[in-house]
Length: 498
Ligand code: NAD
Image 1 (cartoon, rainbow, N blue to C red):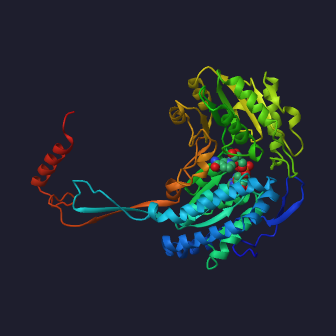
Image 2 (tube, rainbow, N blue to C red):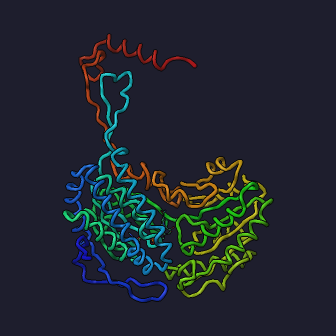
Image 3 (spheres, protein in one colour):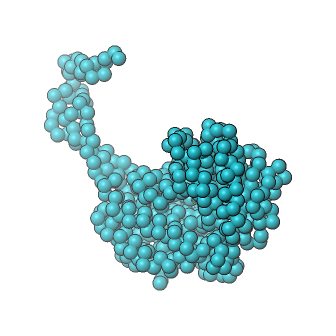
């Protein structure tokens, strides 16, 4: 495959490593500010052509791309596996979700964004009112490494379906995944650079923020999100922020405990805990606490990190995260917490084994900060009101999970999070019609679903006069008679005492 749609003038390069072996799996340019500006200029021209294809033309290309992604999923999964270390089957899961989202946007963009009639109201009954959602132009997408396909595709395919060109800066840990995506798209859209790749570190991302793109969609940590917003503020570039989380799982007394324990272990440990909507904290009703802990411990003991075929989870992709995970566990244990599975010894050079912590103070870093490792803290609560209060006592608010019967929906609503899964875990991410995004330090704006499509558009309102109004308001020729008639009408419509 040739890289036809990536900026190529940079001379400095960097290596992408396999985190399990440190083997170099690819070498990529560090794109400069000039490269970024050139890519955005090319994208601007391409966006006009892409937009002119209309919803049906774009849907046809996106559907073809979906076919390529599906047929070559194993090849892309291998690139994901090499760059992140995650098991092949986990890479396949994120691909499957991304493919499903691509199918959804191709099918639904016209319905969601196309022109729609609105009621003009009695006062303006002579008008025909319509709204449509028009593409912004060029979208900059900056992505993370933990789900290098699923996560950025939540912005990329929605922005493309809405009629925008996209300039994508993947994480420096997963540039090969970015290249694969851009090259495969170019096979179905060879005419223009509608979807381009920029590779490099934070400075390349910062240049994209300042490049005059029409919107910047960022997925990554809350710390970087602050820098992104500051850089985008210089050019008043709007931003969409998908940042980190500290998601809680609640277990009520009437919950299916086996299912809850299974969800806690998979939600907390899969992808070695490097999941923005991964379970990090668990609050369990005192009546079922002992049973839940015993079942969770038993299940967590069956999970092992490694690079062999039998390991369920892979390495910690970003070496510097190892120290953060170690500190969280160390701090929790030094403050009275107990490790029922794993502990400090679970943290190796590249791999972290599952760790289940109990009796950890709520104000410790293992409960407050994003750990991003295969760890869980479990706390006993006297009732679910206490569980909700503790779950909500976080600066983050991305996803959440509730295992309950009678009060499930009430608890789900009360959780301060963008998404809540009830009696399953992370299910919301796999439902393309549902919005995805956070509150607080987890960010703002929404990807996925109709809301995700609208994020990459501007609403355009058109009021078309159908006939001359009996009461003409917008003219200096307005008479006293008109004013009196309007006053009477408005009193009739809105003046009634209750
Ligand atoms: P990160 O913030 O370190 O990096 C994300 C991206 O930002 C990378 O491409 C990086 O090169 C770029 N970047 C770094 N500094 C920059 C700067 N100054 N200006 C512009 N760009 C810059 O995050 P990460 O370690 O790649 O990803 C893990 C984080 O992402 C976790 O916090 C995780 O929870 C979060 N995440 C959130 C979601 C979500 O949907 N909310 C999804 C996946 C991951």
